[in-house]
Length: 258
Ligand SMILES: *[C@@H]1O[C@H](CO)[C@@H](O)[C@H](O)[C@H]1NC(C)=O
Ligand SMILES: *[C@@H]1O[C@H](CO)[C@@H](O)[C@H](O)[C@H]1NC(C)=O
Ligand SMILES: *[C@@H]1O[C@H](CO)[C@@H](O)[C@H](O)[C@H]1NC(C)=O
Ligand SMILES: *[C@@H]1O[C@H](CO)[C@@H](O)[C@H](O)[C@H]1NC(C)=O
Ligand SMILES: *[C@@H]1O[C@H](CO)[C@@H](O)[C@H](O)[C@H]1NC(C)=O
Image (cartoon, rainbow, N blue to C red; front, top):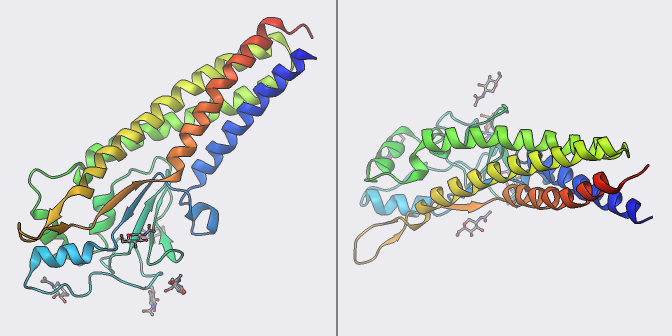
């Protein structure tokens, strides 16, 4: 009986981990309620127009944003209020609910500077980003792109190991529990590194939040606000569940006499 509880809790933990990971993968693959609310990272540009106005004053800022939710992305059709990035694509929203997603691809690179400037009129993108010296990490597309790309493969492997751990663990055999333990350890390691990389690149990208513009006497925020998305918390929760599942899997493996 005690053995059953041990096996049951290991299965429960790896199942929970797999579910968290599935939701993480679904983030920003579409604009329906569930994918819309799951993202690795959010970039809010609501007040960027005000910041840009302070940069180019006394010239006015005209036609920076679009409020047409179906205007194509990456065609200089106008900036959206918010950009959210997932593991496969990003979506740009004109308000809390209406938006459009980029084409999906595995190992989508997190390159917010490209996504944002390709929606702006060309004159604004050159004006805005010429003023930063040294440029913040937010503009460093090769750094952000390479690390998010590598982290994707680690999170994908972590997901595969989590699924393997769950499915071998239901076989109820000493050897199966040994395999489950190994898969859970490997999966935890992959998830740990993948989630750490994302945490670091988001923290570095967030330095753009502190940039101020305008006269030194009355500076205002540039208006690019980067926040951690719910998908990163899902990745950490999945890691937590999987790493804890190692203990009951290991005990089952050592004590199960089925
Ligand atoms: C974006 O920032 C604006 C201004 O700070 C805020 O009012 C708005 O709620 C934010 N949007 C989201 C989706 O958080
Ligand atoms: C919004 O953009 C789409 C795609 O370009 C276009 O077909 C549509 O006419 C636009 N709507 C408005 C109100 O401009
Ligand atoms: C968001 O924008 C869409 C399209 O412009 C509009 O249909 C919808 O009512 C807006 N929603 C909110 C909450 O403003
Ligand atoms: C997305 O894919 C379609 C079809 O392949 C293509 O026509 C379109 O230009 C792509 N959009 C972007 C933003 O790359
Ligand atoms: C940028 O270009 C748009 C469209 O051509 C124009 O309306 C706007 O005034 C220009 N802004 C600046 C600062 O040059």
